[in-house]
Image (cartoon, rainbow, N blue to C red):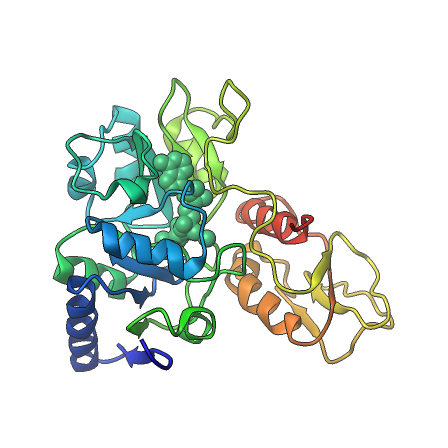
Length: 329
Ligand code: TXA
Ligand code: MG
């Protein structure tokens, strides 16, 4: 493909219909499209087509051991692809459509390409809430594999322009669904062994999940001590700049990613200060997190980040920040 993908408007009924038709035709040709979801933009391809799934891995330079989420339009579609325990069904009913992914035993035979599940006996499923994603799933009529639409290890995209900047030569079109509502990826809950495991903090808070489960979520490590979400690598979500976390000061030349009302004064780069939420609202901070990292990255080599509480979506924000700050290869 030559040049950068076109961004297709979906803001009116007629524009959306035309854009969905164009994107659906591309998916049917095993091409990839940029798809808005309520969390982050996805790099969408036909989950049942090995060529399309291979193109997703190649485009992101994603290691093939790291499986993809299959997106479906409804709980009943999800139930045709995986074995749902009563607990799994309860979570699906409570949070779908929405920013939750469930990892479940796969049903065989499966229409999903083996590469999408990295050959595992489990599958990650999500029913997204974004109306454009839902329209695309309905029009396409098959499960859509979609990782976040960034180069592997980089910052996730929350606008159509971010997708074009990262993968514009790899997708046929990007559906413009506006800036995403949640801002961090879906929460991932694994229902594989005897206890529900919180594999990735995300758009549904631990508290909300535990309330519906009526029990505590276990951590992501299985008994053998290896991570049970293969993609939860130490370094991820990283801008080019280094991050310095939990700061109460800002040093010469540093950009500042602030939170709350008490911004440190200091000698930092005055051009590069963003407050994720002056009122200290973690939900607002999540919405702004990735776009702010991208913006500050254009100004500096080091981003100083103020402490953010672990409550609610704060757990997901801090998870992303710690990975963004982790040593890189
Ligand atoms: O919000 C989201 O979840 C976004 C939007 C586009 O839906 N997608 C997303 O996908 O964040 P990705 O590929 O960036 O992250 C998916 C995570 C990876 O860490 C992967 O290892 C994990 O899900 N995963 C997928 N299948 C799995 C499985 N069978 N068992 C454990 N983890 C799995
Ligand atoms: Mg990702």
